[in-house]
Image 1 (cartoon, rainbow, N blue to C red):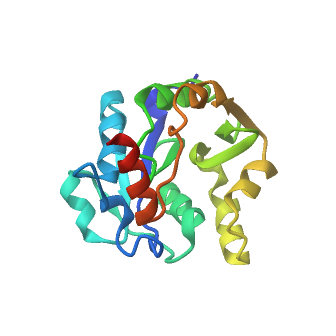
Image 2: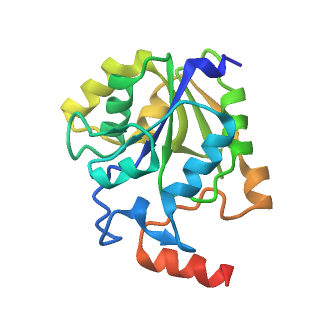
Length: 195
């Protein structure tokens, strides 16, 4: 395991949220903004956290909020922005729309980081690009991919030596663990289940 001090966390909240109709990280889930669930779990681990978002509303959470250095390039653009601002060797990308992640699985992912360029959570044999640690040495590659319009994050992961961190055992205990809430209907469905 590398030192926790070698990792910075970047929470991606910079998407257009076209399916939400509003900033999805700020969408209320049980009267709390969705991103707040993520931030609370990260705060338990006392890791350095920054938010990548193009809306100023995220500054209210008390973390540095960064705008994408190249607009409208999706998570790949978010990764480049993280590399641009990171002072550490590695960046952990987490999406703002996964309110059920826990500090336990964040710790599990970080514990597995060693020499590979990428350390990614795997669920049902597929990587989750927005729950993964990326070495800053990939910055030039990410720049090339953005310039070429190749924005597929899973392709980036599979193109490089990477560490698979199998999460199925955790998902079996908590099926909502990695769920993405991408629409108002998704939020309503989860709220119905909680009620």
